[in-house]
Image 1 (cartoon, rainbow, N blue to C red):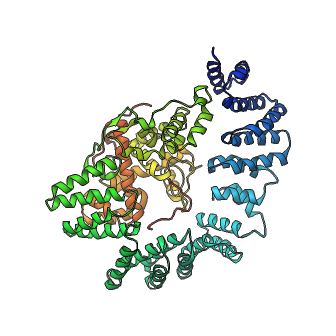
Image 2 (cartoon, helix red, strand yellow):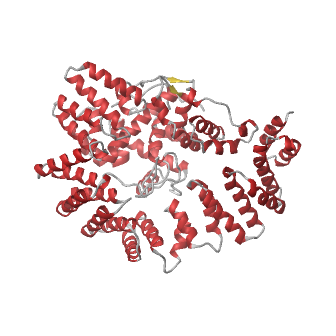
Image 3 (cartoon, helix red, strand yellow):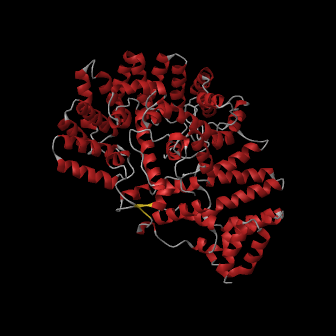
Length: 640
């Protein structure tokens, strides 16, 4: 065997945990390994010594390797040094290396093992808990440690206050956050203090605090403006309007734009002249902004509902000139084409529809236009994703190849890293690596199947199929919901406490468990979370006639959906008319996911408006055998 073949074989033995045999082969390779791969082979020698209970020898090798390791390997060398020092009883040195890991970890998933270890030491420090809560605001170990300390600073009190808010202990949260503000805490403490007061029934106090954040804040200013708008529509209009006016006058950027937009909407009927003034100011001062797009969309929608097709098309085509991203361009293209069709301008309608299909192939609007999609799914890869494996991969160092490729900005490298992750069974890792490549779907005449499968994966397949068959629900709909709810993160927690893969509220999880005659246990456990989420979705599918109605009810509650059904519009207009901004976008995204899943894995598309989510007779559909970017904690709702 050549040195490269020996290396591949040694790495294969390593993956089978046959460490002794792997080390024998690595020794045979010796210096015949390319120089740039020596640190990675040496890293395996370090791990081999550790796993063979020769920890002192492993420690000496690791210290030597630390001096020469490439930057991408240093985190893992630090991890080995931290473990070895700990196991040898050198606590202080171990903690130093765990903290080195925290510095080197460029995302929270890499930092978490080190922070978990630091918090497990009897000498765990407040600084360790605070660092953990930066990444994981509801980490119970860190919160428990802080709860035992006295004379905490502003940062710690803010973190305790936020956690109490999520736990719905609003009085406790308000006290923590008030104390934090006395010690100089910033806008985050004020924002959540305001939320706590509002939830306690002290709305005027909360509104006043949101006003200060909106006027002088940074990260939380736009969120505070949104909260002021919600408060105005919940009966506090007279208190809120002066605050929004002050924000719109004093602030530039998103806070000022948001305030102007909400002033238009709040005063359209009661003070139309003032609304027109704010409208003109927004469209003149920020004509390409997100809020300008919102304004133009809604103006066009009202014209559409009055059968004023030409006016609607004019507003929506003006919306296309904004820089709003996400689904906005597809939304404007679809409905402007519909309006152009109504006024007999077929050529413009065709141009807009062609642009829609080419640029937004996985949008709900493309599937409303053509349930089979605008581009065929192909087994061929575009040239931008093609390439040879890295030297690390060619010599069998698969995990390190994935790490190296995943840090690259090259689409080819990131795709290859995603391929490795998928091969290793890390579906969610592949999903995140492929996420930066989603824009490639807009290019070319076809959709690469392998990339689509990474972007629309089917994790927890056993649990999903079992729950789907038990409740008679299309499994593709479950993955579509899961993708939008949690991005396949089993530990996801929303700002209101929704849990796990299917983002179950505590009361919902408890109620569904009781209905199934089972103990709730750990609601984050994938098997439990999927089962209860499927039961809840199944109930909504049986309650409503259309799958879109059921998906909306899963997000906003059945009572709200029942009220919205009174508008009697066709399903597309019904979806667009959902008054809750969050639910409106949620339904469109889940339905788009559903179309892609059905096309990608089953070769059939759901019929919009039909109850395609329930399998008649409880039979399973034919399933071939075979994962913000989003941030959940502190995600601000657009509507309540």
